[in-house]
Structure formats: structure tokens, C-alpha cells
Image (tube, rainbow, N blue to C red):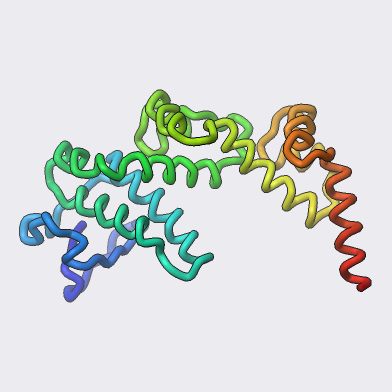
Amino acid sequence: MLARFDRTLDTRWVDADLLLIRLSRESLRGVDPGAAIGVKQPASSSVMKLLLAYARTAWRDAGVTGALAPIADRHIAELVAALCLADAEDGARRARPVLAATRLAAMREVMRREFANPCLAMRDVAASVGLSERTGHLVFAAEAKSFLQELHDIRLRHACERLRSGNSRVIDIAYAVGFSDASHFHRLFKQRYSHSPAEWRTQRLIGSSVTSDA
């Protein structure tokens, strides 16, 4: 719901999750504030799902860099502007220019959150941000990596973190990061890092020990 920043926003909603975004009038150009104030959009709408997932990604990245990327700021503003329109079709039409970037970011956010689910598939990721499975594949088709390659990358990065920081068995780590087949995990890991998971961990531990003794 859009509200003027100089007014108190009643947040006494039961079991409500709030995402508060403050935007300048300039960023909402083309939107009639008088007509938009009080407009409510369901959380299930495709544009709202994209906004929530994209905003989480942008905010996390901003926590690392210390600032919100200008392009992310613009994308968020354009999605919010689309949500300010009472007509859902008009809102979706207005959001089209930024849909490719926000759809990709939204799906990646879901993948980062749900990577440990061994049954995670494109249909689940796409549906969670209001897209069809076919549209989800089309979004990734425009990128250098496919959906499956992206998912494997995420899982392998988390596997490396676990190998580096603990003594868990390799097979347990494979299952913990979403692989349902240990041999598949070994094969992908060796393709990526030129060493088996056990060899990779041993090298990192030796390197860490040498650094500590220096």
C-alpha cells in the first residue's frame, strides 16, 4: 500500500510481513500520488512476488557493498510504480522493461534460499515468483548459465564452505547441500576444482596450517 512518508502508517496487521521502501517523487514520475495512495496489491501478484524477491537480493548485496546499486534502485522504483496502478494489467505492462532483470534476480534469490532441497526444480522456482516453468527457462536462456548450471554452482560453493569449516563426511556434505547422488557430486566437484572433495579439503587445511605457523 502506498502512503505519504509524512503520515503514520498503521502496521497493526496480524501476522504481517512488512517491506518498507522510501522512494522520491522523481523515481515515481508518471504515477498520480492522489490516485495511488491506498491502492492495495495482493502478495500473490506476479509483480509483487518479483519486487519482494528482487528487493531481498538488492538489500543483501547492499549489505556487502555498502550501497544500493543504481540500477537496482531504478528497477525497484519501476516495480513499485507498477504496483501503484490499481489495474493489474496496467501494472504488469509498466513493469515489462525491467522484468528480465528482476525475474532472473528473483529466481536466483529463491535458489540461494532453497538450494538444499534435493527436489528443487525449475517449476518450483518459477512458480514461487509467479512465472511458468517455460518462462523461467526462457529467462535463463538469455544468460551464460542454464538453470541447472546455476543451481550446481550454488551447491558447490556451499559444499566448499562446509569442507573448509568442518569435519563432516564428504557424503554428508553432498546431501546437506542438495545433491541426492554422491557420485554426481564428486564428478561435478572434480570438474570444477580439478580435485576430489577430500583432496580439496586436505589442500585447504594444509594451506591454513602453513599460514598459521608462519
